[in-house]
Figure 1 (cartoon, rainbow, N blue to C red):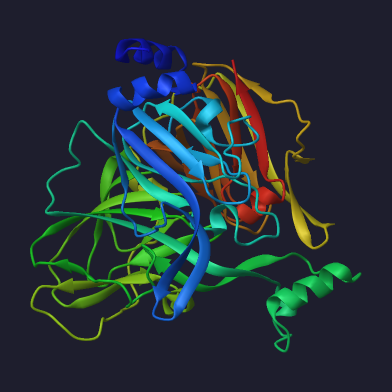
Figure 2: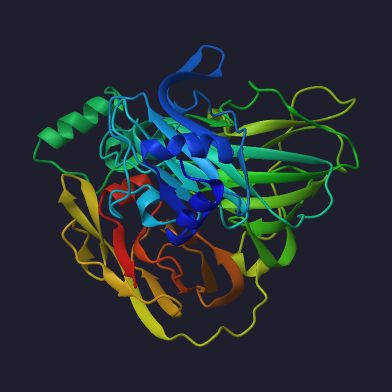
Length: 471
């Protein structure tokens, strides 16, 4: 039987995680905290009479975070009660490719009815996230369309400041369907019928998009969960995760400002107050709100349709009652540069162009995405990166879409967005605007395969990804 010291030595040599043989499990259970993730079909009632059939972790999507301590090993057991193979991705974690949870990195998968055990060392600190990394294709119930996601909070050694309450909020949309502008007029047929008919016919639309019928925060549609109860004068620390499959979001709390302290779990060099939070798919924001506007308010989407579908939560001050109020926000638009130190960037060792294009009509109406005029293939040889070397990625978006771009097993520095300096901001997802530009510096530390992709599931499934190998 392995001792705790022997296990720690092995996990250190493995780079932060260790797959375990059955003979080591007894030692593991006795030596380290345990975390169980059970992938299981479940029903989620987001509103009275509104039940979503999905697959989730541990039967729930109530926003309760999984908590870990930075640098302290955790025994993770993942069990799969579903009937399909699954990948579990530790988003924002610096972990070996073997447990990162992607097919492209040759990570372990969890077979139907099977389970896996490993030792995970959580790092870095802050707001992280775990979710399915399965390819969904045209099945809008799999991958990140499903309920397979959970906030993960890696407890920092240093405080984020004084606050009276800590609230975790995860946004998600449900009941996805394919739509196209040209087909929206065909109201006599269901979206699924229109999709099947057009795939079977010779007529192809420009491209398909995913729309949704309902939305929730922490598994409840607006007005159907318990309100967040606050007192005047309190400081509330909100941790917010956009766990959507495809939708970037804008959120506001009328009459209040968000004092942003961290992006993607990483402290920002310049804290700032904003009236509107904007999160691309997979992004996280940590912000403190001072409660000095008594009333009953809607904290929710700035988009009226999304809010009506359920994207919101009620904030209720003590001693106040009545119908929750909403006011359209005013103030400066969300901009990464608000949180930058705007210092001159370090000199790059290598510069890599990343030109994003759409190849229309290539997949029966499902566009194919190109990076540097190349469509992803499983047979592609990974592009080599060098550990400890500063690689400067120069992005150009030649499409009219917003793209939340994600590097696995890494965190990078934003250098500029559309020419505005953003130095000092470290993230694992950033959003590039339509026809926009961005410069990102990455100094890889984790050896082995690393996946880059658009975190929009539809785009990723349509080839928007690339594999690197750090040596």
